[in-house]
Length: 207
Length: 207
DNA sequence: GTCATCATGTAAGCCGTTACATGATTGC
DNA sequence: GCAATCATGTAACGGCTTACATGATGAC
Image (cartoon, rainbow over the protein chains, first blue to last red):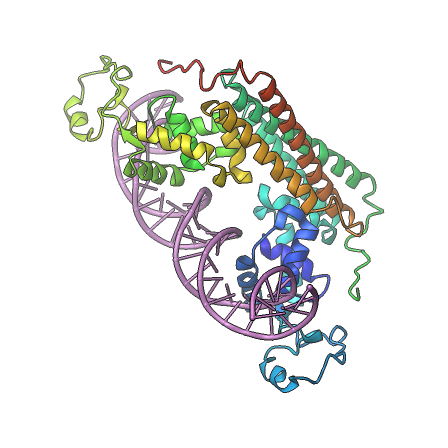
């Protein structure tokens, strides 16, 4: 789940761990409000598996401004990994590899891996998918939700107290609204299925 | 979280693990759709901590019907823990202890432990709380949700693609509806605060 | 000079899962 | 006899969290 989100972000350009965390929150909101204790090991794993690679300096970002020659020697010795752009602490910039992009797409559309938790994240990344996969994702999720409705009969206990009943009803309402939302998405997907191209987006790599 | 749910159910009468799992689903729906691999260790922990105790047979259930004297000897030898009521496999029936009831109430109202995940479960069990604690629980949750709205500005990125934007909007809608729901609950809680007594419910122990 | 922010990482723990192992009883 | 359901438990693993350790840099 985290891997998917990280790869999705890295697809928009090389970034380092600290920045990735901020963007996770900005892009995915509550879906991926994840701690550093998860992110750094995840990046290390992804690097070990060849899905991402560390970048040896991002030249267009490191304009090497005349920040100062003071204590230059000391700084140069310490800057092991990367000469920090604009004097920051050394940071490890990652980029997604072709292999990584492949496994990203494979995992994004893998029907065996879509649980309730990862659905919203997957849908957020749906622009990377083929229209058919996108539709399949939505319909699998819809079926799951309908299954919940029938599995657990709506507020089956009329002997629940008011609080428990209120919670049950609220949850049932939520499921219903999720289904309605999906129906709208599916409908939209079907109507302009021809006009919607996969993945074409103003990828602002030079932002 | 699971402990809370188990204690809440056991407060309505002694039950065994297998039954508890079914009731978890029935009472709390998706909130506590938990596997046996969690339940049995949880019950063992609760027993070790003194919150629950095993019952030495529930006489009113084990009516000892004339099921048969056939193979009676063999069955009697194997029935180690409990003489099974109506010939079932031996099962371990738990009841909540006074200590358990105390820690249940303490944990239910503990303000340091209410994260988003456990809120719905706590509210489902709100009939066990004092009106003031109940109100406090709701208002803490409301504050959390409002905090989310401001922390993560609503669909802050107008450069998100349609899918990501749709997800962000849907989540924002959900948060808004949760707040509206809480407002209704809080309002109801304040108006009939005097008339609502804590915990009085037709506890059907003899069902 | 010290505090907030940027930046990376490790270790321990929590809370659940799946898979496995075992076995009794009921119904076809 | 065989499968489904009832019933309890263990072991391994997953994915995240918090807390800890370290350190640079800029602002006040």
